[in-house]
Image (tube, rainbow over the protein chains, first blue to last red):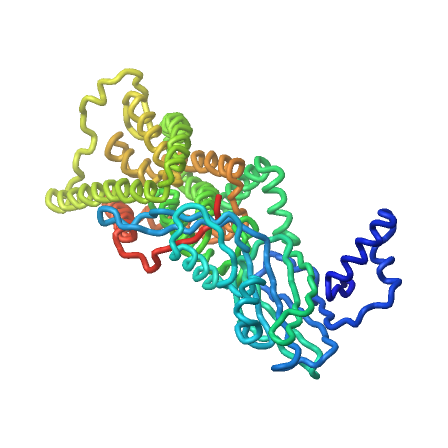
Length: 263
Length: 303
């Protein structure tokens, strides 16, 4: 588990000071010798890694933690944000030419999150002020989507709509549950189509409609077992992989004809 | 039962893939076509990314065709000499076709070009086959005999004549090599083995007997599909072996049943059925081009 890193700036400042004294000293130790500041928020993931095996049909990210004050409407509240690796996307618009519907102009979005999920103890829009929400880029409509090509509003709207339909961008789908006023738990679904790579999960403590503490956790999504080995060989030795594919297919064909030979 | 495909990076229902494999394999054994022209659109329809669908379809075609080829070989229906001549043209054609495909991609309209290729080629081939075979059936009913299929025209004056014993032909090697070449180009652009074009070309252009056509076509398809699979594995890395093997388990069984069923059909009836099937695919693709799409926008990864 990562050391509690709530209010980030003081810790960063101390680390900087320690770093100035001696670059080689172990920074977290130096920081830990000071009496720890009150920790308003502690959160963790149930697993640091999600394994994609040959039976993978999607999974969920489980985040849990505690707060020093009680959680509830009007008091402290929790927001959880999960972001996957960025991916370039192209949005094409179909146009009608001579009675045929063909791909017309296309807008290219060089870097959008392949996965984006945000959920809270209450709906996002009730938790934060509109200005703060936009500034922190929380919510699907607040995601900055830079694009090249035609700049119509329709392209952005289509990207948001289709990503949500695929279950890859989600907002407020599974509310955070709270036990005993201090223990919270969020279960965020991830679809079977997720990309492999490093995911960032950020837990935020909201007080008086402002984010007062945040903790970043990292999650790795990776192929494992047979699926990983196949993808690995295909990438490292494509010719060998291709030959094996051809041989396997030919063998399967031969085996079939032997098996079904009659008389 | 869901299975995760490591290259396609998604999970699909294994039973669905087995079913698709069986159906396409059955047609493959029956008609001597690889089935790529059916399989690739079907895979795209169930959500497999198109590069993976094309590449794995070619890989699946190898298995289904080997199975069908062995079944035909046992019946003595493969003209190896004709197959080799076709193949020589086919490899040259597909090398050129890959270049054409790259040029189309550069122009940014590869989807449209492929769809139009499909509609025009499948529509023409299917329409001609249905017309001819219906005429042959009607003629047989009327006269009670088989029509003369081998006619002499300018083609038979070309040099480098060769005897194709199994096909009962003594013709120049130029027409079959040209047929192989043209189909090589088309198959590279359309991402299929090309059997559905090869079968009618062998019957109508070369005048081969239907019984030999199926086995010989499968012979050519096995090698063309091997070539495509290797090229795809090296260049695009989009061959999904798990997808292929699932399709094949259904496919090899289907191919055997198809081949057994095919021997019960008359030549012209079989041609009429294949013609209708090809025509049906062409019409549904045309409908896809003309119909107002449900969604005006589509998204995909930036390549």
